[in-house]
Image (cartoon, rainbow, N blue to C red; front, side):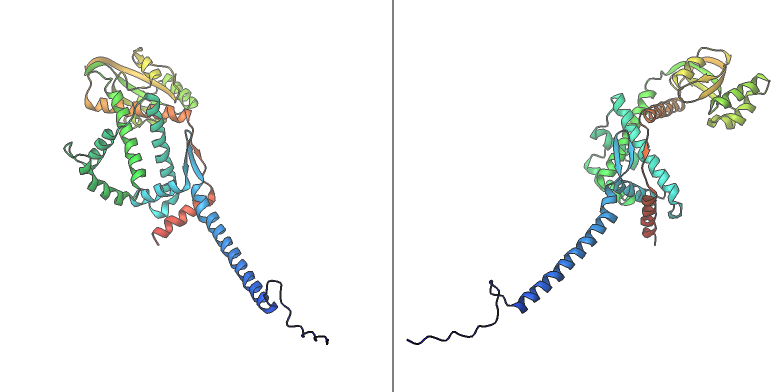
Length: 325
């Protein structure tokens, strides 16, 4: 039997059945695809680092609550929309927004410590007051006014309502001091020098001891608004002054020495003491001073950490500039 001549070998093929040319084409396409994926990954990573990651960074911390860059940017743009600063005054705008956010959080802290809350009913009442509406407007009736206001301030509903709820807390805290005042009570007619520092207080006392008038020293050294009127603070009932100052004012007759409180150094002079009606202006002042005292105490216990970096400030300036380009 004759042997069969073996057939000539065909083109070399891979075990998978793919020839070398096709394999090279697949490898080339795969390499190109990998490069594209890698490039897209770099772009995505860069976008995340440049745009997304910074927005979650904490830029402000008050009393344990952290405020992100994204939140701060929204508030800054809202302040711009409300005309609280001009684009050319970005530094002023940033400082103002920091101050607003800090104060709001300190009010919330003070309210919590006083056991004061703002219910949904309080929120609606505050909205009616701010929109100039009567009590007959119910919750549903507020909707069109609320939509218009959101367009004006350019904030989300949640952001805006938190701010308004905080203002409702302010009013309740203020009223808590006003409600403590009687319709009539003992008052002192007061002159006051708020020195601003112990050194200034010592200087003020020396000048008074040398015979200079209280009015002259107050105009020169006091930091209180009453300096413009020569330190004439006016009639004051109990519940308006800081406790340390009030104790002295309602005890002495005439001029005090240097009074040190937790906040400042004072010299006062009591001109008269009478039982007088407590009018609305005095009640308003008592509420304002009481509220500011609570905020001051909250600030002392919860110092603000401003974590804004130069890079973030530059980015904010760029964002604000783009809105007005």
